[in-house]
Image (cartoon, rainbow, N blue to C red):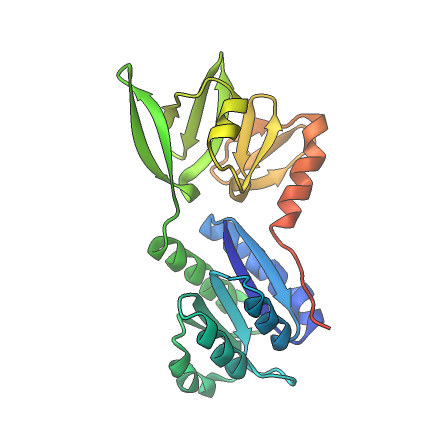
Length: 246
């Protein structure tokens, strides 16, 4: 799961515009992420100083306490690897942001359509340039072999008659583990959630949560147990967390 930090001094704008846009862009890009929002650039700098790294940082340029470019300069001194993007309504700021090695310049607009497109492209580009692979042991032609799968390609795991299958959008693989417990013990399933005795889903692939079922981004419908539904809702909500500076 990637970690994203977004800083804008306007809390109302964060809640009414940025949160929904980021959520939509992540879903359209089919990426799972933990998103932290800040209203004070100094708080974001403090997070970096306390060794909490982010994969993507999105900064509003025009902030009263410490503007986005000043924040970017401090962050770049601590970490030159993260992907940086600026949000601003001032188009003439684009050239002035070049020294900070930015990947995207996101224009504020009333409809939000251009922002959504820019955010989706930013997330997709990051995913392509920084693929996150997991290695699984599968059974193929009655022999065990290892495969590497991009984390964002995995939709869910299912136990069928004591055989554990991994499903992507177009393929299924029979794993060597024989139970969901073994699956959870052997592999790091951060970003995944148990929704049923026999099902574990990629949270980033959940499109809709209904009363007795969920719908994945590929349209696949899976049952969710009553006991695990609240856990799923909680984990799903945690993907969009808020951190507000003092």
